[in-house]
Length: 267
Image 1 (cartoon, one colour):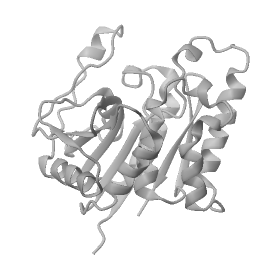
Image 2 (image 1 turned 135 degrees about the vertical axis):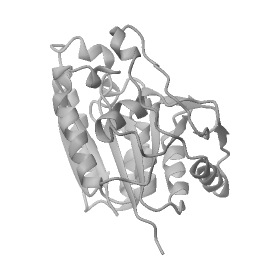
Image 3 (image 1 turned 60 degrees about the vertical axis):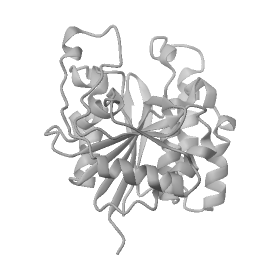
Image 4 (image 1 turned 30 degrees about the vertical axis):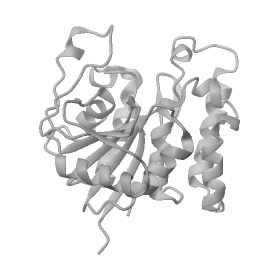
């Protein structure tokens, strides 16, 4: 019997700002709450965070990982945020086994804490912190095909009512957030976002065509403007690798005067 699974690629905003009442994140907060309502309450959450890179794909395997404030220069209250969700060592073991069975070496880390790619969106979506979580790192080369293959391997996970979150950002040019009138900024943002939505949503594309577009994402219009470094995009590749189909639903939100897309695959 096939286990129920939902997959979401989301944009988690600027550091802890979504949790500090920043009005530029209002649409993002509303969107994450809509996604949580669509998904319902999962049994367990697996998060692929843009903020953790490792030599091998690595999973948190501690029982009570805690959180790490992996940002600097924010108000004092941002270092008082709590999200004491438990870990799920059994799921961590299953993730490692699934990867190794497909020839992808992987590791567990029982000391790694949850970063803000996990606790910021989940504090909005599931504030009761009563759902066990496991976090999976990116592999440090950020190779797009490898991360699609990681997603392919994770398709074999037999874990009922699992929510898989690719936590990144469909636009991640930090300098552009602070120079909003830069020439071509909006055009590049919109062009790449439209390309991304077409790539993920277009049912007329074959899955081979969709894969090739994602592998060669740097050829998309505005790609390197929107992602000078791709760590915030690559969680999408893992999500697509698990889904291997067009998305069920797309969400759009304006965050810090930029256009963002988020994608949901339901089962």
